[in-house]
Length: 618
Image (cartoon, rainbow, N blue to C red):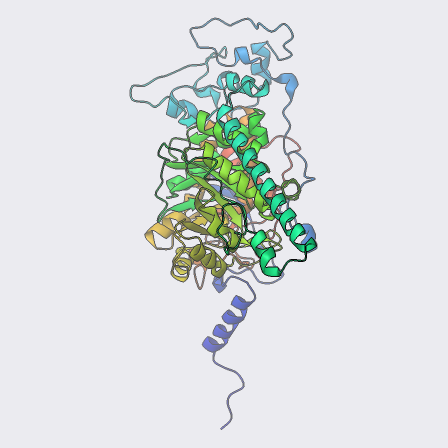
C-alpha cells in the first residue's frame, strides 16, 4: 500500500508551524494574521469620546536598506522639536503665589518676555484640565508655563498652592547638581585629596614594577652575553624576593604591600536572586525605571554617564545619576578610560550622592567611546583596566561592580573573571555577546556559565535574550554558577517581565492596561522633565523612543506557541481591538498618535526618528 500524497490538515498545520519557527517568525493564530498583500487597518481610538476613526495617514514603510546601514544609530536625524526662545517667560514670573505681588526682574539684560498678559494670550491651549503635579504634590513648580495650568492658575496667571495634610509635597528625587557644587567643579576647587593619595601610591607601584622589569631584563641580557647555561639564565630572571628555583609570577604584580586595604568595613549588598534592570542609554531614564520598579525590578542603575563630563559639572550628565526614592538598590554606571578621571569621579559620587554601588562600563560598543579606550575598549588594555578598578576600589566604601561583554574580536571575559575579585570587584555582569556582534547574534549563555565557574566567590549575573519567565528558568537551570539575571531589551519590550518572572506566569496584558502604563510613564515624565512646553516635548521624545521597542511585543493571547522569543519577527497581524492593532504598528507616525492621546497634539512640522535602528529581530 502506498502512502497518501497529502497529509491531513492537522499534520500539514504542524509542519508549517515547525517551518515558521525555524525561519524566525512568531507563530500567531491564523485568525489574527493579515493576508499577504493586505495592510492591517490602523485605527486611532479617541479615549475621550470612546469612538474610533480610521487612519488614512499610514504611510508605506521605508525601503529595505543593507544590514550595515540598519545597524547602530540614526545619527543624522533632525531634532523633533525646537523651543521658540523669543516667547519664553522670564523665570522670575513663572511661579508667583496668588497672594504675592508680581516681582521685578533683576537682570537688566534679560531677553525673556515680561508681559504676563501677552504671554497668556499667546500660550497654547491646555492639554488637559488636570495637572498631575498639582494633584499629587499640591503645587506645580512650572506655574504659569504649565500646559495643564487651568487647575492651579488664577485668571491673571498667579499660581495656586493647595497643601493637604498628609500629602507628600517632595518630588522624591535625589542626587541633583547644586550650583555650589557645579562652581567648585568648574573652578577645580573640589577636594580630591583622597583620590590623589591613591593615585600617588599607584604611580609609586607602577615605578617599582618598571624598575623590577628593567632589572630583570638587564640580568637576562647579561646572562646571554656571558653565554651562561639556560638554567643559570632562568635563575637570574627570578624576581626580587623569590627563592631560588621559583619561577617569576606572570601578570601584574599585586599592590597589597603598597596600598593597604581600607580598615573601615565596606558596604555589602545581597545580590542573590535579584532581578537587575540593565543600564539603558536614552531609554533607561528615571520615569522608565519607576515603571520597572512597580513591575518588580529589584536593582536599578542609571544610564551610562561619562566620568569626565561629571567632573566638569555638565548638567545633562548629572541628570543621568538622579535617583527616585522608590529605587531600593540603585547604582551609577561610569564610563572612562584612565584611573585618574575614574577614581576622582568615584570619590565625587560617593561624597555627594545617595548610591548603593558604582558600576564600570566595559561593554559600550559605540565607536567614539571605543576609540577613546573606554567602554569595551578597556578590555583590550588589561593593565589600564586593572589600574582603574584597583584605584576606584581603594577610594570607594561602596561595592564596585562591572558590566562587560565577552570580548573584542575574541572572547577574553573568562581570563578576566578570576582576576576581578583581586581587583576589588563585588559583582560581575556579563553580556553574552562580543563588541562586534552588538545584538545580531543569540547571547552565548554557555560562555557566561564558563566565566561564572571561573570567577570564584565573586557573584556573576548573565545578560542577554531574556523575554519570558521560561527564558529566565532555562538559563538558571543551564547555568548553575550564575547567581542572577540582568534584563535589558526584554524590559523595554515588556516591562511586566519582572512580574512574570517572579510569579512564573504569562501576563496577557490588555491594550487598555498598556495605555494606562504609558499614561503613568507620561505623568512621571512631566514630574521629571516638567509640565511646561519644553517638559512635555521632552517627555514625548523619550516616550516615542520607548515605543520604538514596545511595539515589538506580541500579545500572549495571539500566539499559538507562547512565549515570544527575542529573535522571532511577527507577521503582519491585527490585534484583538483597534488600540492593540495601533500599538503593534512599526510606523513612527502611529507612535506619534499614541503620544497625542497622552500629551496632546504635536507642534507644527514635528518630526521623529528613533535613535536606535539596530535590527533586534536577527
